[in-house]
Image 1: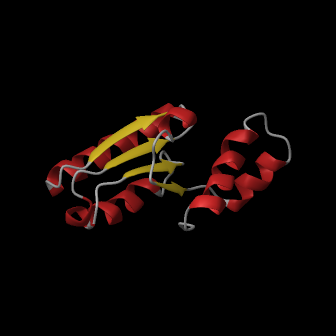
Image 2: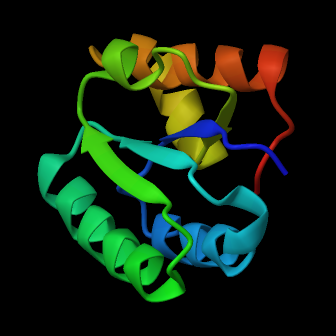
Length: 118
């Protein structure tokens, strides 16, 4: 498989480390690829980034992992987008949470451009 740049919206979620471990298990198919973790919570994001970087280094497939709280920057030039949020969170955001655009924007990207990841 070709080198890709993949963004993971919700990359600081409790599911992100396991999802990335599954992705990295297939490392030889993604040699030279880049994963960009995107999340609003910088502490959780940093925790997942450290775990993913360690897994990527152990795999030895030259897969890089970065993290950002800036969704627009994280989505620049990506080939694939994964999202991770719970449906109850999306409903709460639709109800008027001040940060609603962040999750809803990610959901719109997921519906138009990628397969759903659950």
